[in-house]
Image 1 (cartoon, rainbow, N blue to C red):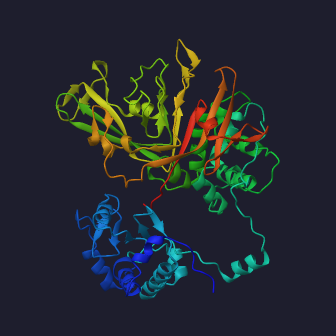
Image 2: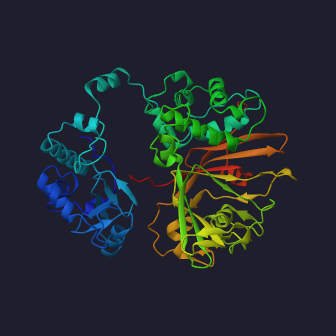
Image 3: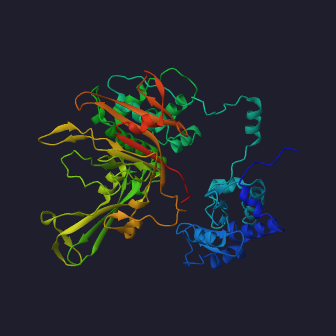
Length: 526
């Protein structure tokens, strides 16, 4: 008999007498809720025991009768106080371990969850196939998508195709050069970053794209899907992205031609076209509001930027929230006055960044971006409270963080008097905590500085660096390259088709940096 699949070691404390029966009761009454009676009971009793809320991703403690919000960390506080390390998500049925700080897999628990879910389906007069088809739109029968299990035909295909591609730490699959088609290094470096974006890669390699365009040959999403297949095919010869270039020229005409273009401008144009083509629309009419879009591009790249304008007379606040795909940050050395370096520039470590005296950090740039700005007498706004034009302050913060955060360091300055490149070195970390720059953290600020909370359980806003785009040369004559992360702590430098070379973490962090791509460390269901 084969040994059970390895999983979380902390579940053993839960597996005592009658644990299976207790777990089944929780699934029956508070998770899947197949009958009308259990759904009614769930609606009445499943509220947070600390704030009384029904939503905010309720979890139930597996050791005692306690429901708590996951979003507001009430279940975390209970786990910490009582040392009850396991809880169950009442919407999706996943088991969360507070010691591992992640959802865990346990073979026995998974089996119980599946059995109870099937019972709930039968009570609802649904088959698993129907549930998958309707995506569980009825309340109380669990996750939105049923667990995938191979069909007889799929099992047959697996038996007839026994060859498997094993991913090892030394594996180079996914690493492939791109031919420069004439000043197209700006495109190649962005393609390298996108093809190594974990969630985007998983989406395209699982064949999730269903083209809705009238002409699939003009669909940029279809071309990206082909591009991912090419990158992860195992072929080592450089790829020629001529079709991608043609489609970009067709749908983003301002980038057409063989002149050198801006990599940041290409990134935004590419995301825009991909976003529109995901919705089957070439003109942006059906998908002109990224805030109300659920395509894969917006799921991964779209965040929400909160702007608070405060009247200096009545202190009334006007708030707007706008979607964003990237954050452009001013640098010291530009014509825009830069905020003095923050405390910590004396050699201390802030947000994982090691400060050298006089060195600007990514955290400094973000602090400047989110600091209150006095708009002055020349930019008075009409206050809804005062009913007259008044001076005000404006502050930007993050209302909603994207899965992938892209930071654009504004190295190219264009003005009536000046056109130049800013070469100021900016130190950026491998891991970034965005909590200080959230709208919810404004109350924690004192004199513009964020006070780190004592509770370190919050990992929701932590990011890991996975790609860096660099520009070498001047404004008139330059070249783009990129660093991409292949596996954890394994980095490679991509320079068109020349050679993809292994790079050290020091090489990455010492680079100048133009576009920085960070991926969330922990992903949650919405």
